[in-house]
Image 1 (cartoon, rainbow over the protein chains, first blue to last red):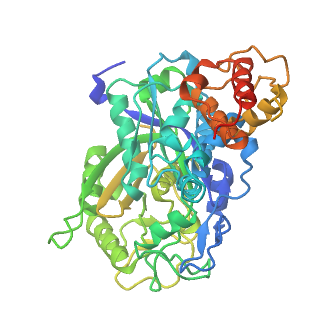
Image 2: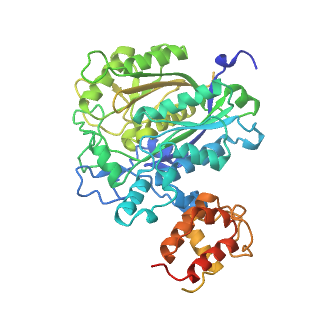
Length: 409
Length: 87
């Protein structure tokens, strides 16, 4: 191997997906290219009396098919989805974990709420029946770090691990933390985010943001950059990715999806304080770190808040970096809803498969664009070579993150 | 109250903590340590908590920790069941 740790590259070698429009990477990707939406009325609980009634739910998930019996009593639904995605990513990477030194592989995932459905059930038992009725597994099943822990235990990944909690930005921030661990000497990291809190407690918490769409029409509820944008639809799922030291990946002959070439995180100015939001600076810093100029970027996966003021700010940031209509922009999360800590990881997966298949996945039909969002929004699959993609993400309360993925260089 | 049997215990273990792949709980497991059956201390705690509720007995943390096989746990439970009810 040449160069010191800081000159090493980090590459993606495995993808696992659980998404509202497809369980498993290929099912989701084909649905995404075909514009198939996973948004519909909430079925996981009775949401009919709440202001928001639509969600993106992962279809056809048979827990016994994917989760060992011992793990079923101790896991929230979203942890089961994360375990399923992690197993797929590891299998996809065809890595023999037994061959790695004991502490060379770790897990860093993103979370926004932890296992809320599990937690709600146990807190209800506590209040209505007493402490004797609370599951011993409540001690960890609802924690932010639970997905990292369960993935680590199941696969014997004993290296540096952790969890990032930055709402929607977490899906990128976790991957960046995994990169730091690779730079410090780890060889392989399981990372990304799978999230979801489709239960009354989680729903109520999300409603307080004031950003949930109250539309009951799945095709018209989440319209980022559209003239009729009025909030977003929440969803569950996300992607787990394998990020490896490029040298280690090469040595074992791994198939490489692409490189994590750049990343940056910024904060917005505090509430009521003047100044530009941090998204543009995050994008520019990530591009600079990747050593690519804006005209080399083939596609931007936008955050796509679906809230007019936030859409305008993102469109401004993109336009400042790339010029008016200067880059294709897509929001495939219009087909899944916003997946909290899982969303940006799923966008990373989409970016990597865009590189693989030379096609930009479409945004669902958002109707007429808002006047202040003059973007080249991709609304049908656009075949073209993709060598460089920029993924943007914003987390509630001021987090911004940007990541650049490139074809293996 | 009637004694708890191994069959009843394994039903509760399965319900509370699942069943490790490759382990046959219906086999001769009376003296097999819980750890070898795939159950960690939390799994045993979850199960003893359920037994406390269902049978109206108390199993102290120490007792649960010492009862590291199904036989030892059943002995403790059945001792408690045969003791005169308090108060």
